[in-house]
Image 1: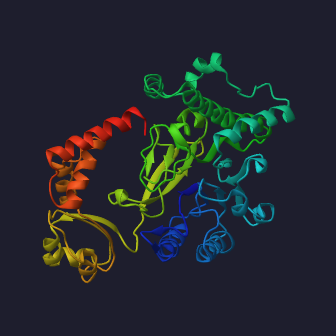
Image 2 (image 1 turned 45 degrees about the vertical axis):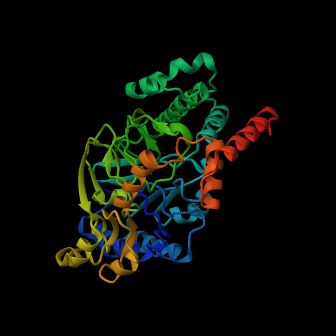
Image 3 (image 1 turned 60 degrees about the vertical axis):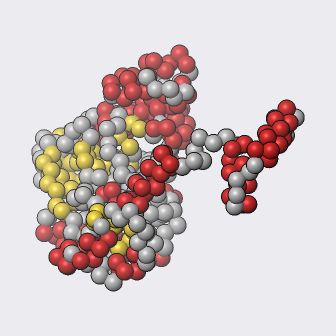
Length: 435
């Protein structure tokens, strides 16, 4: 079976005040949809963050509706979807029971969780397990309720101080050392390990709960795909992602996905693996920050054979506008005709090396580079930093000396010795009276 893995479309995204819906439309209509046919894709998995915010703009919803209709109704390719931390899980998955009959399979809120979805190919069945984004505090009650309702022997993880040390079986060794040596409070450490443990219970239980049902099907050969929207230990972030929670407590171990033939991850925007070729972030549809300028965005094609082994192929995404960071003197940028010709269609961050102020810089740059998004005066900032460290007379000052300098600046002349002595008596009195 050939599966196309994608994630983090963020439809409706703003980039330095510019709506990217047109850019997203370009990639989806001119690359994603043709690729489905050209690569003979059997199923698409979208691992969360369809939209950039819970209530997306109308244009983004319209684009999503168009792409889904062309994928599921026209191309007849099943689409598996989970909600991400940017999505409204309930809005995104509205009408899921009806849409599943057309081949659009969605999971959002925890109460919607069900048995895996099964697809059949020439070798038998493949089970798709959908794990949408879940906040740590939501997962423990869900597992507890599930245990009660199903009578499982797996206990819900309600951790006290005495249980903290037992959770390292679920945490990478380097992560254990880093957190044990940190000065983070014990509650933060325990929450980190508790979430990793709970998440692993969730994935393991999903496999175990359906094992009996699936084993009775003779055409299934242990082939399975997991979709998850989470921060897996070791993943490399970019500045365009929203924090899942504070203090690193959202991190889970890759061990949570042992047992799946392939795990399609969403949330981190850089294409990357997490300890295994079969546990992979596809990355975002487009670069959504300038620190992603060197990233090569791609669609991930996964071929799963008869024994559940996966082969990976990356298909580069060619954006309508590239994201570029340039660093040079302002006049040098303006005079470099080859550079201007090469980047006139790109979103540009210009990092200028000039130490003197550049007047009307944005207006002048946009005359030759229409899509300049921002200017960072790094040369000027370095000068200002040196001044603040070495030459700024205010840095070592206390309240008394600051006030004296203020008076001198306001009057335009230095205080006399008598005035300074008088001011010192007032400061001494103020300190004694705690004014």
